Length: 345
Image (cartoon, rainbow, N blue to C red; front, side, top):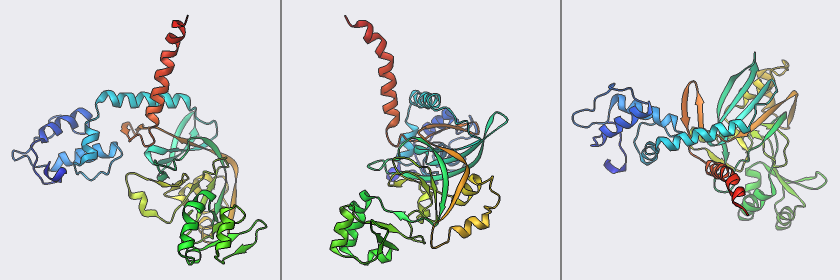
């Protein structure tokens, strides 16, 4: 390919093979296109590449780059294994009995809100999310119940983040505290905005903590969905909304950032009509937190599926945390176990 990428309008001798592969994968109808005599990459072929990219969690730009070529090269048997692993995870993860529940598919970077109706699970909402970094702050997989929503939340900075990031920044630039709307909080709830070596040492020792006040700079945005758990993971908005446009969205310290918090809040508070959209938005702009407790808890499942069927279309996403490989190894060992047991003297 010219320059390592095939852009729309460029020529490439490999177009015939590309057409064959896209037809085999169902992104291009048989005989729906004839490769231009001059080998130009245009029209329906670009559309088919975008379809393939969309189905495989790639930037749907129609550009044939390394990530797209690598995905095209994955053999069908490997995709079949992905589907089998996804089905095994579905078997191991029964749906909640609750009327409403939320799933976050971590490697897909997607949240869905579901409800049971007449024995069928309906999907009401679908939105993009940002999850924990694959390298060092992965989002854990679990199921917990959402019990309340906190509008205009404080961000109590975890000690690990304070130690690794915030305190070093404050040592280099004491003005960072005020610039980010942060403050120190003591063991008795006392508040200070005075940056000193002694105060920073007290933070590192766990005697004081740092929190960020509600406002436009708050890392949690203006809404937090609480599902109490021992890993301090929750759903929240973010001021860094441009990150939702990235095809790969593992940027957080482990919590799940959501794209449309107002829509999710309305869906969760459906049985509390006093929580109108206007009241929700007003509560998101307060100088102090506002709490909305749910009448009925909403189960939240943080799941891991690299093969997804939606609207009759099979989609695949990369194995972000390498969990497919872990599950495949465990299943392989479990299949071998009976034979090994029988071979022992």
